[in-house]
Image 1: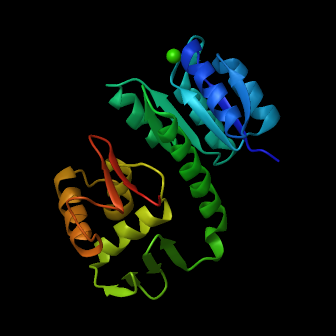
Image 2: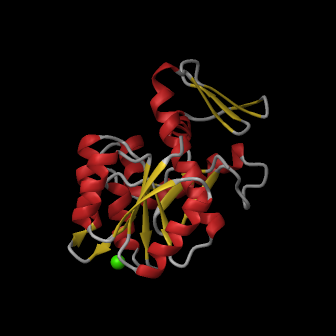
Image 3: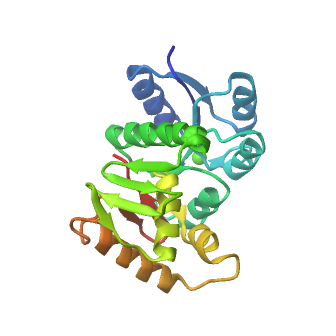
Length: 228
Ligand code: CA
């Protein structure tokens, strides 16, 4: 059976483009141009993933994210205009998985969908797993052992915590605030040092730290572990 994707977008040209592209790639598309109808379709059909525009005629897409997150972890990919960094960060912080900035290519759209669906699957299997694998990176959570291409990597406890959190959420954009909270707790606010830790981590696990394959920077927003 095809996976269901719910599109909530009021811009007709993007709405139609998404509909045609997704249908062509064997997804079942549920369509809505309003928040209200989107909520109704979500509740009724429980899609595998939601593509969500934030500026809707009858409300804010952020309200949709909040509503869904009280129910479950269905992946939500936000569609946003260039320069809407603040609302993007807010959406990610509230539990959206990723975002697409208009205009985006078909390839980009399909890749984000694949990654988010995979992330969702990973999260639902995670409870039994004590070894996390992302491409050639392997983390043994219980034994605190990290390997890249079978080569042992020595990490400090904070680096280990950061890497584990990123790997656990591979495919999801993690905003600065969330990473800092996860590693240092609620009250630490220095972005600078997060950058330093990321640079050190990259030096240890990336073949070419200036062209990272694992830890990607989302400029002005946060970081994402790539599993593509
Ligand atoms: Ca809109």
